[in-house]
Length: 324
Image: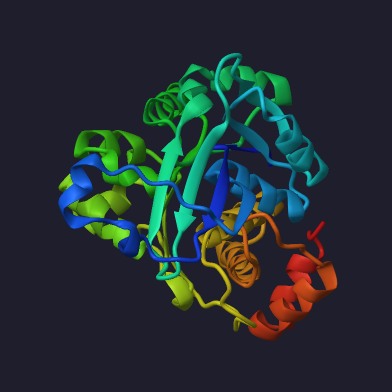
């Protein structure tokens, strides 16, 4: 099963200021604020939802196709993804803009000042999925993740017109989208991904009830945080899968992307929805135990030991046969 993942490609530049922002602000001079903070360290991390999902799928051996736009500074990041099993041949490289970048400084009280530069991400709207499908010999599923909003709409319309099954996954972009855009993006999706809060927001913005939305998509996949995931289908029993016990809770960033990577890998293998969700929850647990969205290492024996402990021998036997 050939799966393409469209979504943002970005780097995070994270800095730590040992003092407090509040101590540097003068109340009656905020209209002319001009400050510079001497920081202790700089942590550069690879990110972007499209790249994060593809990295996880690559770790599981399913070789996903990453579809997105990056800048002329993408060479090192591309080499990293290539080494970890991602097909980057359909990434559009901008001739004039840098890869999208999040720059953030955190103070001693965990307050943050950040900026997000969209950069090359705005060119994702220029990518045609037909060219991607022709290059790889066809597409069985396209996950349309958070990206340039116009790109998300174009990819959705193209999937519909070319009868390519697609998964709708708005995540960070849902806040800026209106009801009409969300209705367009989810109507006809084979899978609709969201967390519990986003689920309510989707219903509020579209004006559709949960039942009406379920009738317009094949499967509704709702992540429930530490409680796992719920999968709903019209006329079928609800599937609920719990999460493995965490060894530590280090950083929740990218956990949702990791779940999607595991779930999509399960679909690629052809296992049941329950098994796919279990793989997603296991991979998400590895990510929450790691600082950074692509800094974990999937060690097959360790993965299967913990998977077996949580989901049992029968489930483990099915997954072990596919794990790369």
